[in-house]
Image (cartoon, rainbow, N blue to C red):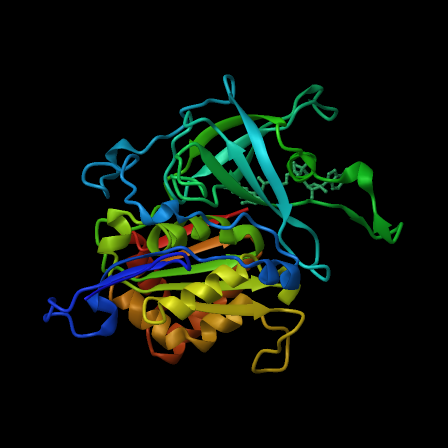
Length: 367
Ligand code: FAD
């Protein structure tokens, strides 16, 4: 049975021939979809994003390794700090609502195909100017790449970043001190289309997907802009038409922690994904200033991990890969929650953690 829904956009090829696979999930042989962002969605949420073009229904393979999961040719540091690539900003859009704590922007950059990267890698940006503290040019800042290798326009020539503007709240003044705002994040969030950027990288191999085993469940924990690498993962698994998407048989489970619903990042995309792939994609949020945990305190991401601890452990014991990305401060809470889940199951936490790390199931990129 082949079902192809055009402008809408869901292309979903279901095969009834695979009798060996019991669940509905595994019968989905080849799934790729384009999630339309309607004007009403944008007005309602205050989120503006270019609608995803129908081009993604075409097979994408020109940036794949052979076989597609072979990590031996991953590009690393193609552009070094001393010789960065000059790239251009295509667009900068605020992607949070009016009541969000702080500002986060979706930034599309044109690298003309000169900086190929894989999902989960980061890009370096060198802001212009001289660092007064060192009397030297500013150093590089890293940003997780939030698009797949093909970019949001599927050309392989762009990348997307998800950047939170760093501000400084002066407790004595009782207000923000603009003199102490973050250099690079503000430069990026204020950039206009056409602004030139000094790019380095791509960097990092910690956050790569386990594509060599397409049945592997993927558990993703993000606080704030920690969502960035997972946006790349999830677009690769559920939006693009690649061999990786076709082969994926696992469960992708996203936990996102932010302060309130206006601060949710790409929420409508995740909701649409959940609707289309309820058995392959799970999405849970922790809104610290809107929801309460079971003890009546603020709901943080660790509370969600604890709530679903049994399932998380079951998946990990089946070989799932777990990813942590976002602010450093997320780790103690999440580790504490996992330790208490282990205890409640009579499992030695230290040994379990070491086992997962050794098996390459544990991926951390916090900043
Ligand atoms: P900086 O100018 O470096 O300042 C840092 C902080 O110090 C700011 O909060 C600033 O307000 C404060 N400050 C400045 N002057 C003073 C002063 N005199 N006294 C006290 N405080 C002061 N960030 C993202 O937004 N998105 C990402 O996807 C992302 N991915 C990352 C991935 C990795 C692997 C790493 C390591 C980091 C990542 N970051 C990400 C963080 C990013 O690299 C930057 O650290 C961040 O944007 C702040 O840089 P900045 O130049 O704006 O701030």
